[in-house]
Length: 282
Ligand code: GLN
Image (cartoon, rainbow, N blue to C red; front, side, top):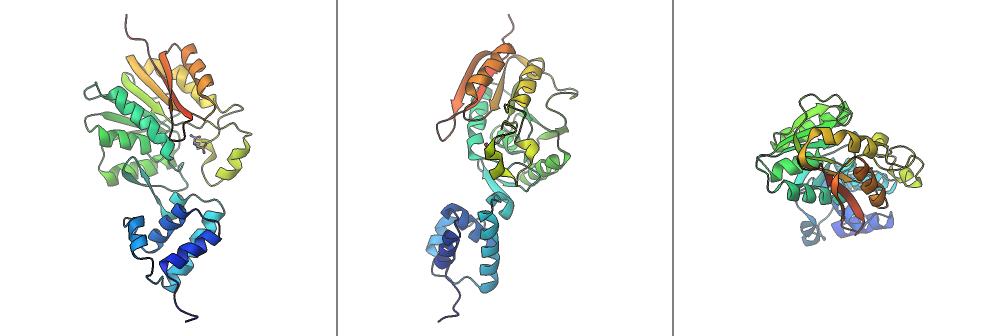
């Protein structure tokens, strides 16, 4: 039948022809069919089901936007991060799986501390702060962002997920009242060099969440200088950074007086996070 509706398998085949990665096509198809929670196994089990023409049109429109570079998370309005379903849009950075490395590390350093106080700087969608609060219900988590728009997204996520994170608008730690004595400060700040050609592939995301000066380290410099005064003695500063910045970030943390400076690798094996401790009280 020439006019028969395509099957799910055929729809995914068309997405492939448009250049989409299989996982992206699957997430967009689940979204289009109103089954975002159903999962990829459901698609496989239903691959001979028909996709009605209006849904097919909507799916192909999303596929074309994806092929032009829009993150899947913006097209579906959702992103899974550390087991949480976050709502995201173009007001915030699309949370990356690499950042789960930072959450793992923060949970480790907080593990021995009861009711720890934690700050997440540049929270964006709230991903890190919300993941920490979800894993450690006893923690007092403060999420900071300079963007009022980002804070709207993060607050909405906290409310929907029922997580009691507190929020503050601010430029890293500057001007934050009552913000001393953190057991850990964590951040996935912007860290891409302003002239990095890689930025051209990220035009759909907020530039102020991505780029940070000539070498990409301006914000990490600011945070590493501000952080010690806001940490308890022995408290940790943990930062995400670019795949080739570990050495430079380690040097900045040592200059700022941190001890036990070390790095952690992401899922791809890059040294993606670097941290250190405010020296314990003598
Ligand atoms: N990891 C992102 C990228 O390189 C950048 C995120 C950031 O700057 N914090 O695509």
